[in-house]
Image (tube, rainbow, N blue to C red; front, side, top):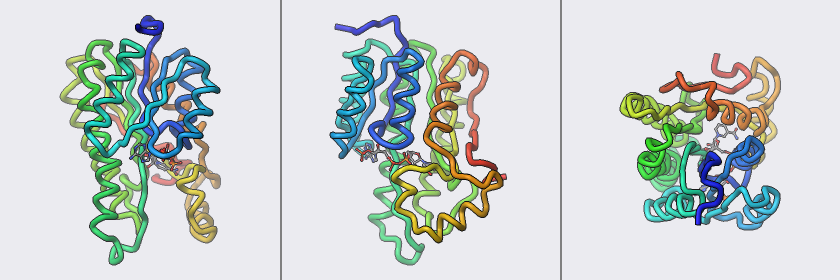
Length: 245
Ligand code: NDP
């Protein structure tokens, strides 16, 4: 039984915490039904489901695993009957000096960030063609300018940019827009664990002299999913307080 099939529906990977959680909240506030995935944090997922009262489906799913992603997209379609907007947000970092970076550190980050984005896009594309929908891939300023100590993370995010531009060209004629956001330093658990000294250094290089919030990203993601952005595809939008300028 489809719940309210006339309502637009979005799918957000990694939506229980941080930027993804704020994206889910914003989309629900803009009248979307939303499926979000989570991998570890059931408590955060349950509190979000409760908060969004009937408009969201939370699915335990690993962004690095093809079968798990197929199942999550199937559950979304069973629940909401359509897919208008895919937001590839799930991501991890394993920051280390290059000499200490193990192959496992490399592989885990590539599998989750880059292969996960590829797999979600591939599973979702036929549904997005049906609705003339859109995809936003959450990349990073690291993928634009590179960051010492983030060779694996920066490579995964730079890969997302190539994937975004290629899919944009391949699917423009089928009515699916594909764009990427490249956030700078956003206050979440991911950046919370950084040493205060590193945070001060980063802050010094941000022209706006402040870190971004998850809300700064969620507002743009919501705008990019709206009809106001119909004529835009293949673009990478930095949201970084000027860091990449
Ligand atoms: P957080 O660490 O706060 O949250 C990451 C989210 O991704 C969590 O919801 C987590 O789920 C989920 N996740 C991680 N691995 C998997 C997986 N294998 N399968 C499913 N879900 C997974 O990170 P942010 O909110 O800061 O980051 C969100 C995105 O934004 C990431 O892609 C990140 O690279 C990108 N970004 C962040 C920046 C920042 O400064 N914070 C800057 C630039 C880009 P769970 O809670 O269940 O573990």
